[in-house]
Length: 209
Image (tube, rainbow, N blue to C red; front, side, top):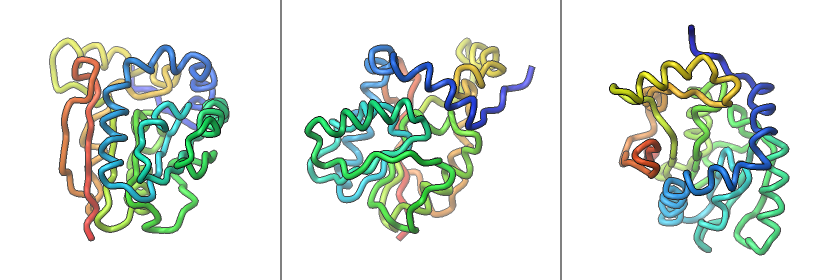
């Protein structure tokens, strides 16, 4: 059975279900990865865009030297993120509803662009990567944290078996790393395990400048 295709409707429905339980269910699982990504973004500093901000669970992890804008497609997730941002996070400049494949920002708008646990949930990952590249300033960084498909072993078999249910899960279980490597302006500068027994990976790109 082929992998299920994701679309905006299935994504919004999936995350409407996940929103009320996302933080308690996934907060601990994703903690290492999101803190590593926020720390890397803080080292860059300046204007930071978090694409796929979700419930805003990572917002408190950014340093005071960051001016953060978060966006997401899911209204249910954003409602929680806005409440979190309003609770004393003065370095958060905005929480917006927006499609990651059509970012409403000019070219080179941000010093750093972060996408955590996002690239496997979007209908067109290559288009999203192109948008992350486009809005990042030359010399800036694009930072991902994500699950990528195993190259072998039992995990690869499990991911292949789960792939047809991607629309219900709201993400691609068998997403290959090569799909984030297509932007000529982005050079890979770091790739390392980011928590939960190596299931997640932190990836950093630097944009040519």
